[in-house]
Amino acid sequence: MVSPKDLAKRFPDDFQFGVATAAYQIEGAVAEDGRKPSIWDAFSKMPGRVYKGHTGDVACDHYHRWEDDLDLIRSLGVDAYRFSIAWPRILPDGRGQVNEKGLDFYDRLIDGMVARGLKVYPTLYHWDLPLMLAGDGGWTARSTAEAFADYAAIVVRRLGDRMDALATINEPWCICHLSHLYGIHAPGEKSPEAFAAAVHTLNLAHGLGVQAARSERADLPMGIVLNAYSIYPATDRPEDKAAAQRAFTFHNGVFFEPLFEGAYPADFLTAFGTSMDIREGDLDTISQPLDWWGLNYYTPWRVREDSDLEADYPQAVAVPPNEAVPVTDIGWEVFSPGLSDLLKDLHARYSLPDCYITENGACYNDEPVDGVIDDKGRIDYLAAHFGAIADAREAGVPVRGYFLWSLMDNFEWAEGYRMRFGIVHVDYDSQVRTPKASALWYRALLVAR
Image 1: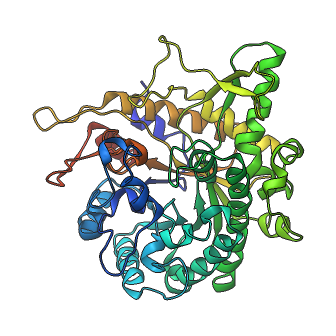
Image 2 (image 1 turned 90 degrees about the horizontal axis):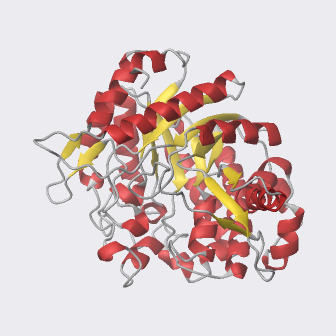
Image 3 (image 1 turned 135 degrees about the vertical axis):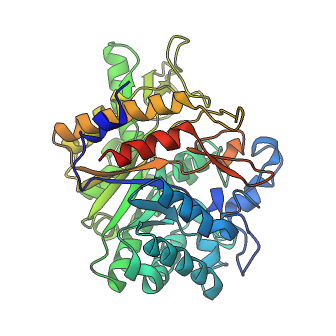
């Protein structure tokens, strides 16, 4: 394995290194200081939706421990912290009355970051939709995009003066595909019609959110975070290669093309357009220029043609890794070239601004042994993926920074607390934080710059 010092040499002095979290996964305090429920509060309490009925009610108790957590971040030697703002704390009903205590919390948090010399990279939406908006249709309803724009303006008006960059939405793929088509995430729908409606609402919300934020602070660098997939055909058969291209369009193109080209893929519209409320001017709103974009990458997909002639678009089936392929504890294939391949492919296909790796990391569920968490698998994963990012940079891709997922173990959505992505171990009973070997490795890399 390459040493941290040698890896550090492959990145320029102005390359930003950070860590990332999300509000519902770490904050807890779901009923404090005026916050009302989100769709994840409701979803996690439905029997059978989340592993062992785990919820984000307490999570990592970050709402009360944020000062110590910022000290922990600072101790790692990182430049920046990526976090999300909880919409239900700011507008408990999704729109209408502003909850000043919610804004006060993020005021304190951001001031604490600035005081510690950490750059501030918030995300406006990381899946915790105010539950009241679900009654209007949630992300299937155009009104939610309009409510998001109002929320964006309120946040930027109060907090934008200390932000270094702002992301509108985290991973629209998860909100659309996982949440409305596959039923795995909140609100748990399995509806092609709801999925298609959500795709356009999310894209529109992003565009309206950018406009609203820029109306408050024209100089604030605006972007979006996309979990694009590195998709490979399972074989060299022409049918599988064609399936891989359709899968790319279905999973990636439905966001990249409207955002960066001002149009939806034609075959996607053929399959789903009748369920999308696309109005005149929408694509101009969606495709306004961005200052940056974020890529979240964990694992590749390998697909083959779906031989069922009645199969829905994209007529592609994911092929699971075989037993010889290394996987993380959540079962995801480890393949670092997928990251560099994807970066080069996306920047060749589209005219994209500067890129940040906004999430990258691995699930290894190592527990303390005599107070030490020796997560060598995570270190190997990170080292390989840093190398892949350096490869992409050397090939001309403008990657400007990296945020490791995650600062600490947390509520891993439908997997509850059984899957651990953190470089800091959290004992959920005592809330004790213990840096893992990977945290020490990451700090060594940063010190070596």
